[in-house]
Every structure is written in structure tokens, then in C-alpha cells.
Length: 524
Image 1 (tube, one colour):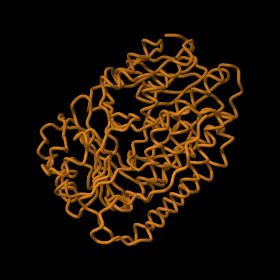
Image 2 (spheres, helix red, strand yellow; image 1 turned 120 degrees about the horizontal axis):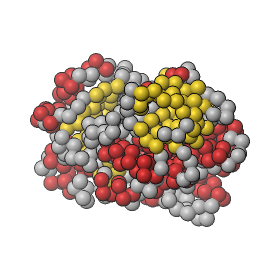
Image 3 (cartoon, one colour; image 1 turned 60 degrees about the horizontal axis):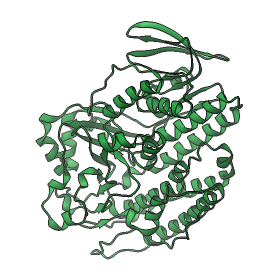
Image 4 (spheres, rainbow, N blue to C red; image 1 turned 90 degrees about the vertical axis):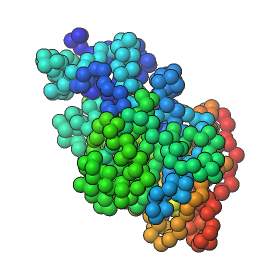
């Protein structure tokens, strides 16, 4: 062990291990120490929740960190996100209105066995040159200039090292957040319980209805992140590469109080009342349950995540929004990219004060924007008509602005982000307005859709937004594309409002994603 490091990472979970890998890929000369409290290796399947990735996180793992081979060989491909809306009884999956892709998307995402991935990263980081210690518990951090002091125990023995940068990746423990008094509540109040079953629970087997089976080209719905949606809740079924299935219940605290789900027998009883078909499947496989965990009021905020005093927070040590849409690995990717930029520029002798200030504001604004997707919105979740429009809107915003900026590696480009700040403010205001509008629409719409299917990615412009995330851009064409996308989102918002003003016939089961003429793509 060295006496001094360029970077000490507190925590060797997904956020900390990926940050160490990225730092050493971009600057192999760095001396990096990672301190992880658990004993290595971690168990597969029943280890950590956070098993699904979407475009930003998948791109970060596959392309930025060059983990494509591991993802292809050791994890599962994700067949998009799929929703089954409340039909009033929820006893036959074929009777529920379905929203999901009919074929695998071109832009990949993955179902992640966290134990398997973190074990792989633990060893790979060591091979890259990082010092990664298990059974290492941080006991104190003393900031200094030019060096900080980190005190920890490793297998019970005390140690002290100095470093230029310290990054907190200790998860919900939030070591630096607690030490510096940075904890902030989230306005979104939600709870979750989950368990892993040592068997693939393939919902394709839940019905023999031939029409339902034929809607999807591959017949592999079980590889999706499957959501069973109802008033104030959603239930997930996620397959893992180790052969297990993750099952979870996520609820709005005001509608479904935590004590109704905080024990496995209570979760089963809750499923009996709200998702009886899923309850039957879970009870039939109770002898294969590997674990049971829960979180009360899991969303949380933070007053600051980056400092010009050369410390930073990443992953859940900073902020957490909600597992719906699987944004956890997205925030890891974005946050680690910004932290890497600051550490490398500081190493080059650049004054990073403006970077730390601007990146902190931007990252927390992104957190606020994502929180608006969930805050007071769980009441909509079982309503197929309004929720399908919401999913289309949320995905359009994600692909048209948020994911596009990450794929183009522009979050860490200080000058570029500053140049589009007025556009981002305009986008954020529109986004907040539409979340409020969707909630108001739900309150007066009594439509119930059943036995139909829609697919967001089959709508032409939404398909193009997703499939052109990795198109080649220079700054001028990227800025023009973002401006065109925001202008289109403004028209899309109007089209959603026009659709909401109509009252569909009781037998009308058509999709409710309004078509909007798309602009021509902008090329570099």
C-alpha cells in the first residue's frame, strides 16, 4: 500500500468500481485506491438491487468502459421496458393493455446481475493497476491542501493514507454526505420491497392465448423489464444472468403504506389484493426465494455533490430518484464522467473551480428534472391511456435531450453545456409543465383500455430519436439537433393536449401516442 494516492474511492460497489476503471482508462498513470467494506467475492443474484439498465447506463458500460464482451457473455440482453396496465382484476395477462417493443431495439441495454458484474469489475480494476481492498471500512476523512487524509480499517487493522482527491461511493451510507451535513429529503415519497427467486419466471408462460403470443416477434417478453401497473404502484419482474428472477413491489407511500409490504408474507398478501396472477406465480415458487429486502422512503437528495476542494459524491452516495425507468446506472455514468473530467483537468494544472460549480449545478438540475417524472405521478400508473402518453413523453425527453448529450460525451464539455443553458432551461420548464398536465388529465379521464398493445419505439420519430443517439455530430450539428428536438417536443406536448381533449369510443382500443410530423435530421 502506498502512503499517497491521486484518488481514494470510498466504496467498491458499481459506482466506485466503474469510476476507478474509467479513471485508469483515461489516465493510466493515476494511483487509485478503492476501499470496499464487504468481503470479496459478492454472491450472485441475491446481492444488490438495481439490475436493469437503459440507454445511458448501457452505453456507459458497453462503450465508455469497454465492457461489451462481459455484457454479451455474462449478462442478459434487455428486451426494452414493458408495461401491463390494470384491467380491474389483473388475473389474466392477456387481458391487460400492453405497452412494449415488438422486437429488440438496435441500441442495446442489459439486465444486470449486480454480484456478477461487481465481482468482474473488482478483479479487472486490480488488473488495470488500481489497489482494491475488501473488508475496508472508512472511519474518517480530513480535508487538506494539497492533500486529504483518509483513515480506514482493513480486516480490523487501522490504516491512514493521503490523497489529492477523495470520492464517496459508499451508497446510501453516504459517508461524506453525513460528515458534511449534505443530506436533503426528496419531495418524492415512495417505498419498495424485493426478493430474488432462483429460477427464470417467464411471463410468456402465463397464458396460452395465441393472439397475445403472436404480438411480439421474438416471443421473449420475459427478457424485458416487465412492469405490472396499478394505482399508486408497479411490480417488476427482471431476469438475471445467473438464472434467478428479481421480483419487486414499488409503491407511493400515501396510497400504499410501507407496513403493507415490509415482510414477505405481507408482500404476498398485497399481491393477492392487487396483482393476483403475479401472486400465484410467486407463491408457487416460494421455496426458491433467495432473499427479501426493503427500503422505506428510498428517494433522497443532496445539497452538493462536487466541490472545488477536490471531493465528490457518486452513485447513491449523492442522490437517488426512483427505480422506474431504471435511471440508477444513468446517474452513475453521468456522474463518473463529470468527476473524471474534474480529476483529469486538475491533474493537468487547470483551475477546476468553475467546473466544480457548473457541474454541481447541472447534475443536481438533472436530478430535479428526473424527480419530476415521479413526484405525485404514481397515481397515474394504472391508467393505460394517460400512462402510455406519459411513457411516450418521458422517453422522447430522454432520447431527444438527456441521452443524446451523454452519447455525444457533452455533459463534461463545460463550454458546450454553458452555451446551451438557455435551451436546457426552456426544455426543463416544458418538462415540468407536462408532468403537471398529465396528472390533471388523469383526474378527469375515465377511459379503460384492455386487450390492446402499443409500442413507443414503433412510432417513427420516437424510433429515430432512439436510433440516432450515436450519430456523428460536431458542436454545430449537435446544437441544431437539440434545438430541433426541443421544438418538436413543444409540438408533441400540444398534440398530447389535443388528444386528451377527445373522448374515445368505449370500444376504441387504439394506441394513444399522437403522431407529430418530424423535422429532417441534422448532420455534421
